[in-house]
Image (tube, rainbow, N blue to C red; front, side, top):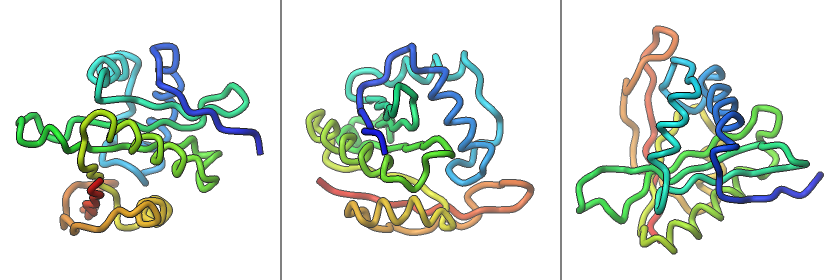
Length: 164
């Protein structure tokens, strides 16, 4: 397997980020979002992910194969040290260790930027994602029952956290 390079995302990467995010939406495994996103949405999203709220890219053979971000958890100053994280992997590269590399780097960046805790929200049926997070020391906080609707059915969402 070719080496994976991790780096900060730039505006040039937005098309690839968009493609991978839309795969996550289409595959119904990573988000409650159901509307496919466009370039304007991603540009606005990217502008909100500057400074401490980083976006990382995983590249392999000059192709973006995944991305990860530290997102604002809550705008209240009491929650400044808590980051909400997202990791999305191109569907052809899932289960190959790229998420683990992105998560490790995201945690390094989080600590450097004075985050003391990361939280995330995942579907209970996303066992691939949960395995990644459990192995990295995240714990299940609980399940939000019927937190959203996908394909006309209520779905639960699992909250997880890790203190640094």
